Length: 139
Image (cartoon, rainbow, N blue to C red):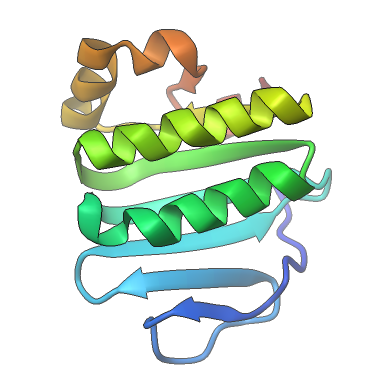
């Protein structure tokens, strides 16, 4: 997968410099959101940390922007240690927005505790969930 320019600006309170090919939003030591674009125009939103009420507004903004501008969006959950109900609601909202626009949203690489939460509330039945980012991109 190659990474190409995707707006190239910092969002939130992340501090530091951000390269031209992705945008980041960060809540110090809680949630890092990185958005990049593949060669096919698909947005890859990579999350690291805890997805809870503190970071959900920024996550909602990034996901809604992604599904509003790309043919598809993959949310990489591989570095997410915690996901609460506010994070679940953001994923469902983004899925609905993608469906309304006729594009797709896929989840990738959730760790076991996050995968369990997704299964318990039925999100894995609503939103396609793949074991790896590569598999989610391939669909």
